[in-house]
Image 1 (cartoon, one colour):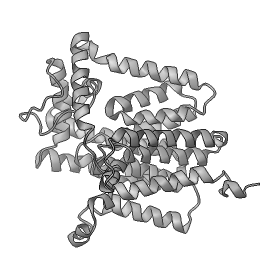
Image 2 (image 1 turned 90 degrees about the vertical axis):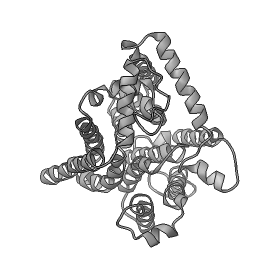
Image 3 (image 1 turned 45 degrees about the vertical axis):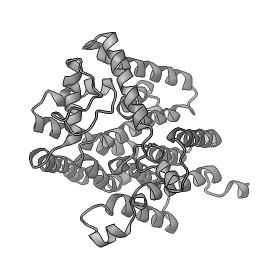
Image 4 (image 1 turned 180 degrees about the vertical axis):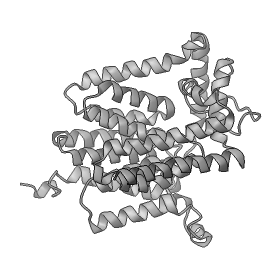
Length: 371
């Protein structure tokens, strides 16, 4: 097992190196350029949320706190910073899965997650790191490490907002109020962190500019449940669908809270939350899939194999992780609509997880049949 872990870790780090050469030497890593420029723009008190084509090809869409926290990668030479950023993402998800799962399941999970993690690193995005932070929050609350769980949630939230859903892992705890307060405090500290380099008025202006950009972005839908609603002719704004998703998640947690001592149930709920974070993210894209597929891997490994679970896993994994790669002929890719390769399979997966959590007890029998 030690040899397997060393080999897999080498594969992860090698993937980070290859992607760095591919994008940093022979291409242009746009997202990394955006992140890197955001730190220097923050120091110069420039509006973070203005498009500057001399720096990158898209807007910065994260928080001012993320811009400051990106400092260790921004101060390095461009390619060295890109490699360090890719390594952090790769190593974070690698060790998060090791921290979460039993020894006999480490290698399986790491191998299955490696492909979607690679796809995320190819765009130099933060999704693998965000997935790792959600897992760390889960494990921390599970083991009573309230500060670590709170910091993981705070870091994830100032990066992509939706990791705030990981706060649900603290709710079944008896000390939930203390956990919530520590998380709020951690969030407040991170939100105020840019005050180390800019004035309160400047920070308020950055948050105001960010809110304007977010209001514009709110009208757009990515590969999410909202895309499926639009395709069906239902033109709701994103927030009612997201509100329904949040209410459903909390309802399931309340329903199964009495079974929280069962770790298989907890792992199942973790997978449910991770898929939720992509399905109900109105700006989800293919690079976000590592979060959902990581959740699916955890869900799949939590229980003994069955034919239907294996079939569902294989179909979703192929459509989401494999169908967009060079391993699949172009003729097959053209046969698959974009929503069929991400939003639809992940939404179906989430609904199946919902059905399992709502209708099955710990003994895996339907509630109506349990004695």
